[in-house]
Length: 104
Image 1 (cartoon, rainbow, N blue to C red):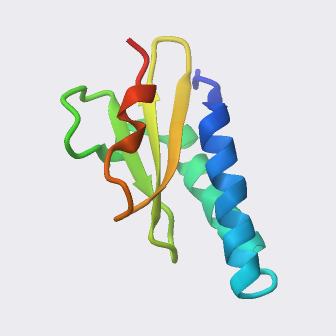
Image 2 (image 1 turned 45 degrees about the vertical axis):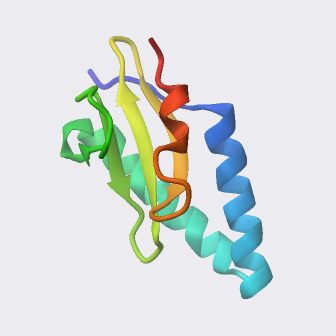
């Protein structure tokens, strides 16, 4: 049985901000970004172990999945009862800023 995928409030806000930013650059680009994120989330739900280890984090349960076509990735952690999305992060801006969101 698969675990439920829970998107943290900070990750939701990052997703919304990125969609707005992309829409400001080109109409409908935000919708395309959202579709790519939804595809990444579906990949996480199907096979959480397919994500790569998040760099700079010693906890092997913290993983990332790249968002196709965009320079972003979804950072998540597999917990006993759920898959928790920690961030929708740009690949180069503010590396590991989301590390404080890792549940202890």
